[in-house]
Length: 133
Image (cartoon, rainbow, N blue to C red; front, side, top):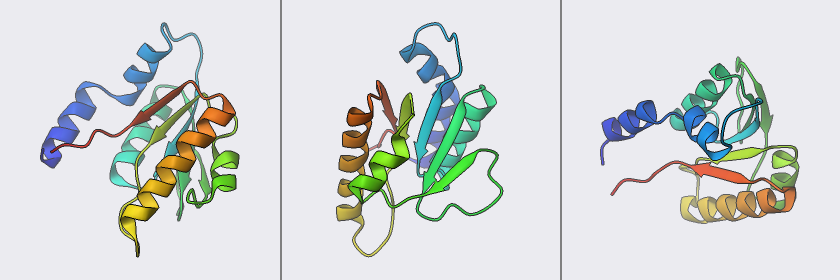
């Protein structure tokens, strides 16, 4: 699937709508930890959630400046760091890292640590980006 397929699917089914359906009728804003918030997909997800009134906590290795929500610098390959990063979140949105010296190992460690940390923290919903073939 090309990039346009991702954008179309994202715009047709934005993260705020997915979270709203997961929680039923939206009665309050949720705290959503967005992994990969500085990337193309993560930044769009975070902005859509913030626009919908959710509290966004962005998680990134290199957070940069100018975000409209809180962004934490965190290495999610570290289990204790993942625990601290998702503490207090109602929902976690997971985009996997790209690049680096060992991208496959990094991706596996991040996914494993974030899902495990979310379970320990009592997070009820984890969303992720769809991968096309």
